[in-house]
Length: 132
Length: 132
DNA sequence: GTGAGTTTGACAATCATTCTCAGGTGGAAT
DNA sequence: ATTCCACCTGAGAATGATTGTCAAACTCAC
Ligand SMILES: [Zn+2]
Ligand SMILES: [Zn+2]
Ligand SMILES: [Zn+2]
Ligand SMILES: [Zn+2]
Image 1: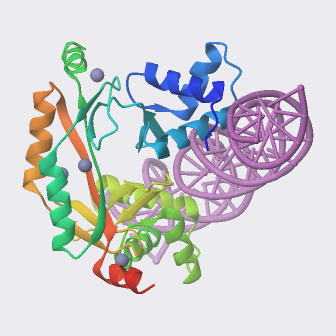
Image 2 (image 1 turned 180 degrees about the vertical axis):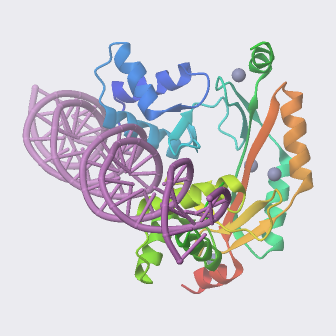
């Protein structure tokens, strides 16, 4: 059974407060800045646990870091992420789910899982880019 | 202009010889085992270059490593990968391309790029799993 | 309140990847 | 073929994220 410690709560709240995906390091820095004496290893462990329990989604940044986010739904979904400001939109796409399943099956693959993410520039950042 | 060194050739050939996606470390180990005196940093640089030039596809493993593969086509495509033996099938999916573009547009995002990969167990490995 | 099992955190250890820089080399010019 | 030099290479150091260690602190069922 998982125990309920203030450290886990702090990580959960910090995640909820963040807009987009954040790294363990980033979250740790933020917590320390706000005065929390939490340890780095604890942040890593808490995030890993939250991801396993389905309370957080995770993905690998192009630089190889693991990024986490507290999503509003625990149902299977994907993300549309602004690669400039991190703004994230949760998206569902039954068509893609079915495409993935049927594609795997057509090639004889079983137990298919998939990674589907879209990265772009959100409306605000697109406007900024034009002006800059 | 890029120079033509035996090191780059060795990396290219090693990549071509590999079935699925391989890490820089793995490729380096293989090259050294086969007697090549190539350096590790050189393998990293060669792979990064090949990826930029479009001669190799790359993706991030769940453990955060960068994996590379010499694909038969340089056109945009995705992969169906066996998470047991690494066997990889190249797949095209116009429907997914269009979905990604329209989804991004619908939310006001511009310059959309996407990551789409399917991981499963290939026919051979599925059979093995049942037997084991 | 107690005690056993869990969690924490400072620090060391890993591990992939990048950096540094002195020495080597491809290939264009001669 | 020889020269020249900007680019390439490689050994090892440096970096940075993540994980392992283990004694002390803490949770929670009893
Ligand atoms: Zn944005
Ligand atoms: Zn999905
Ligand atoms: Zn397989
Ligand atoms: Zn695509």
